[in-house]
Length: 484
Figure 1 (tube, rainbow, N blue to C red):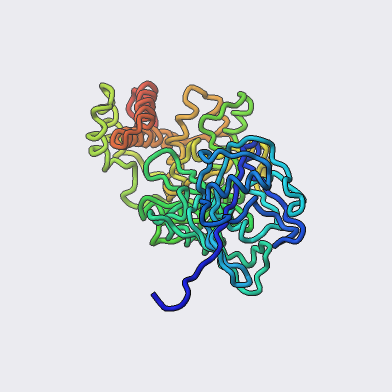
Figure 2 (cartoon, helix red, strand yellow; figure 1 turned 90 degrees about the horizontal axis):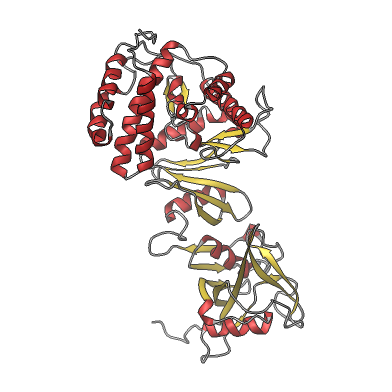
C-alpha cells in the first residue's frame, strides 16, 4: 500500500420504489428544491448513512420514511445495483440502489423544504431534467447489472446529458453485463453499432440455442441482437438481410451491423406478433393468407430466377440418416412412403431457383393489425405482415417456402386459394410434386431433430404432416409431377 492518508468517501442509499401498471413499471421520483444540491432536478428518494452504527438497509428504511412517509419492512428491501460515482467537481461516493415493491402508506412530500414535487414516472420514460448520477443508477438497474461506475468529467453537467453519458456497466462473474443480456463481447459489439444500451430483454424462442435480445438505447431507439448457433446460419441470415430483405421495405428487418467472429447481428425491429396461434375471423384470415402470398411473391421476385445448379434437388442424401434417427417415432408405413418418394425424386426435372426465406411459416411471419400495409406495394390495402428469422435463407426452388407453410392451410382450401391469389399464380405440376417430396423429407428431419432435442411439438408436427401426405398422395408421381 502506498503511504499517505487512506481514501474515504461518503456512502449513500437510493430508493427505487416500484409499482406495476398496465403501461409498464413506474418508479417514484421527487424534485429537489431549496438550498440543496441539484435543486430543480428529479431524483430518487435518497440519503446518507447517519454514521458507522447504521447499515445501508436501515438507512434506506429511515430515509424512505423521512422523505416520503412510507413504511418499509427491511425484509422487503432488495439489492438492485451499486454505483461508484464521481461528480464533475471531482468528489466521489458509492451509492447503493435498492428496489422495494411492497410498503405501507401512500407516498407524499414529507420534507417540503427540500422537495417540491413527487411523481410516479414510467421506468422507460424518465424525465430529462434528472440528476445524472441517479439516472445512471436507474439505467444500470434497468439492464439488470449489479455494479456500475459513473465517473463524470470536469465540465459535465449535474443534470443528465445523453451527449456526456459516463455510465459503465461492470460485467458479473458470468461475463454478462446483466442477467437478461448477452455476454460482454456481444454487448460491446452492439453498443459500437447503436450506442449505449440501457436495457436488455431476452426474447429468445423457447428452444435450445435460440439467443435473441431486444436492446433499448440510452437515447431512444430499439434494436434486436441475435447470435447464430453456427457459421452457416450466420452467413445465410446476413446474406438474406443484404440481398432480398431490403426489397421488402418495412416488411423485413434492416441489418445494422454484423460480426462474423461472434456470429452476431444487430437488426431493426418490425412491428407485430407471430401469426402462430393467432385466432382470426374467417374473412380476416383469408385476407392474411392473401397477404402472405404477396409477401412470398415479393421474396421470390426480389432477384431474377436462374437455373438450378447441377446436382441440386430434394435433400435425399440425408434421407437414410434422418429415417434411422426418426424410426422409433414413425407410424407403420411411414418409412416405406418416404422411400418411395425418394425414388421418385431422382426422376424429377429440376426447378428454377429464386431467393427463398427457407423457414417460411406462421411463427416467422409477424402480424400487426393496427399498422398500415407497406406503401411500396401495388396492393397496399391488406393487413400488415413482416418476416423475421432469415437464418435458413438461401436460393432454391420457390416451393421451398411452402413446405412448412402448407401445414397451416391443411383442410382449409380457401386459405390455400387465398395464398395463391396473393402469390399471383398456381403451382405447376412439377412444383406440386416437389412440394410433396420436400414436405415428407422435412417432416422426417423434424421428427429426428425433435426426438434428439426433446421437442415433442416438433415430433408431433412431423408425424401429422406425414399422415396428411400419405392420405392425400397414394399414387406415384411422374417426372413432370402428373399422377399416374
